[in-house]
Amino acid sequence: MKKDHGEHNRKLCDKIIDIPENYNDWIVTTAFYSAIHYVDHKLFQIQPLEHGDKTLSNIDHAKRVLGYQSRHELREMLVTLHLKPISIGFSYLYKNCRTARYINYTVDDITARNARNYLSAIEKVCCE
Image 1 (cartoon, rainbow, N blue to C red):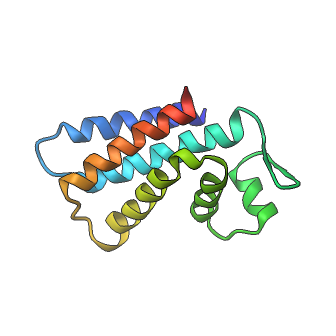
Image 2: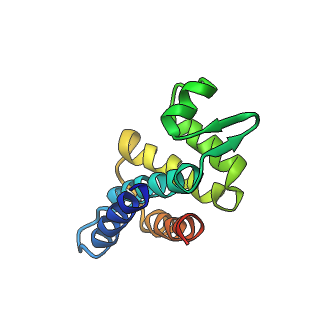
């Protein structure tokens, strides 16, 4: 289910790239939200996540058990600890998505291209 949702968002990300107008903020945003679903698929859906002495079944369960306020910050921490090869890309997407959504929607072409490239790497690690 999470993997399918990630693919749905990735397909939209790819369509936005082909639009002649500049929607780089939405490229970054859809890349991040696609990555969220791919990461959740890898962390929780293949098998429950063993984190220290805890077994975590999904992000909401992990949030309750580990006492986090933000699912995004929790997920970033779990990626850093359990999915190191994609942690830089995931953090890049998280940071740039927050900026695009809440601070400044103007995103340059390089940032958008990097976001899509990081999404490809995340998809490869989490879904293959």
